[in-house]
Length: 123
Image (cartoon, one colour):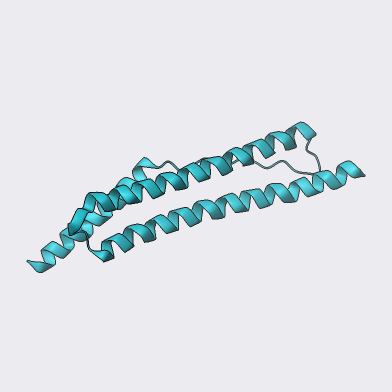
């Protein structure tokens, strides 16, 4: 009977975590970063705006993840074990970090092309 309750508790925690994932939609990042060697000023400005929007979208996504995790923990109530709470928090942290890593990678790629564009423009 104890095994059944542990299994039931674990599946409930995963269900709560899945709800968190289902409600928060991962934002779509910039499809393409222009090549700094050939891009026009308008293309670079448009890319900059897209990266800025992606930054805002990632911030909103991470805020959603935080809210969903808190809701999942609250929904578990007093019966939720500390291990289940930690599992929900671990999933939140993985998703949060993945989104931030993606954002940083795309921003770095844009900044690299922007440096190339600016060097070309000064020549």
